[in-house]
Length: 601
Ligand code: ADP
Ligand code: MG
Ligand code: ZN
Image (cartoon, rainbow, N blue to C red; front, side):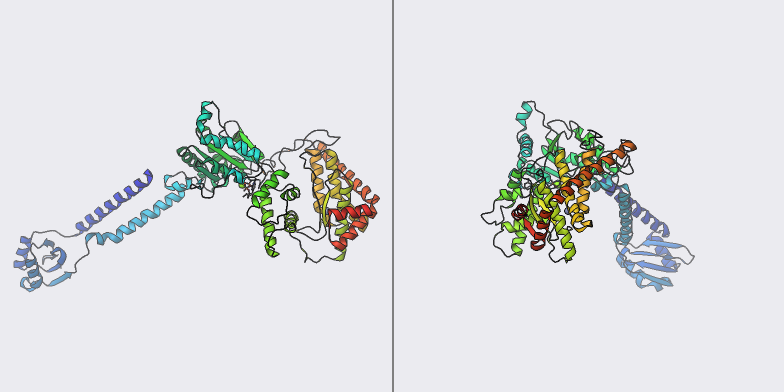
């Protein structure tokens, strides 16, 4: 704040100088001062032509008959009164009475105010143009880090984070270190400076960080990566500086940077390349992280769902060297999360969360929370006292496929097409035992889709074999094949299936090294998404010739799967017809109904 007081000081000095100059100016302008005796002489000699009396100052001024001007202060009020009242006695021709003037400070007040306004105006101009570098713009450079919940009002604890046992165990060590650092330091152990939580959106990274703060009982600074990024150059870097200053003052403490990919993206990437604002911010972050020593009591925790785009410098030892993967929960994890989020909900007593957990593979914590909420909303809408399995099932399907659109008008022709399409999927999936069993088939439009075939895994596996992937593609193409086979025409309804099938085939060839001709070579960098900037500038790492081969291989995979589906459906035409016709009647088939029709026909 030193800068600020000096601005005020110089402003005051400036004003004083101006006032002094103004008063000097004023006295210069006034006439020759004479003493009262001289004035008395002029009075008796009748040489005074005019005078002006200023009552409050007992001042008399004016011109003599010879043209010179004069001014004098009358020493007594009685004399002053006499002069005022008897101008005739001195043959004075003109008399002016000056009303009592304002006190001097009031006279100058408008001027002073004007000057102050100018000073304020200019200083605010300077503030703006200075950006973050200047002292006047202190606020810009302040980090937006918030000390989270200092009074522990909305405390989140590890108990609120369900199903993430390994993650919690890993973080518990850090909490313990913050609570009692001595035993770690005595043992010569080094606690990681930075912990990076990596995982898909909605898996509870932010929640986990809040739980650490609740558990640790130390100050917890939370800031989002995007808070560092401003339109003014240099702001990000100075915010980082300020953040670490605050952290050092409050050590031991935790600094949490959410969505760190907003600042931590690889340097030299992005359109425009080079030395941009984000890069300076990242550099500052790296410098500051090196600046505090081991076991100093500041622990950085960052969260991201794009660890692949982070700058390698952030991840090297001494910085965010410990990475904790916060994954999509497994069945047991989902059951635990459902338990947490059903605590304040009224469920029918016979509902088993384990069944629901089985029904929701791939759901993240956020999805499950949403699921419980949707079912509660549905129960209210249906005027029920308790949430039943119906509502839960409907909520699951809503989340997967969007709400049912019963009112959408579908022509009979379209319904028939959809029925055969979905039946095609279901039959192919059923006939390929490696695929997950069919759970539900529907031709009621939902969201963007005209219908859907849902299949659910018996056991979740994290690896996919080549034959399983090939079957998966055949299952996806089953819809299109059935259309072609039965209706004789093909529709746009299969576009999403084809997109997914192609993407699996492409990955098999390019990433997983599963093609016979090309062998186990990867033709892709690690990330799935095209990261604009990094990939755009890069040329392909393989020749045109190989590119042709890749395309050929992808086509081969798709063709084989298509033919497999075609053979299966041709051979089982009666089953296909039976399922499709039943769908046209019932609109929706559960697993058991489907089994029954499949076995019968
Ligand atoms: P992320 O930061 O990983 O994107 P969040 O931490 O913001 O995800 O999670 C969003 C919401 O999902 C949380 O507020 C919480 O309600 C729920 N959630 C996620 N994971 C869990 C979990 N393991 N246990 C309980 N609730 C969870
Ligand atoms: Mg988050
Ligand atoms: Zn389909």
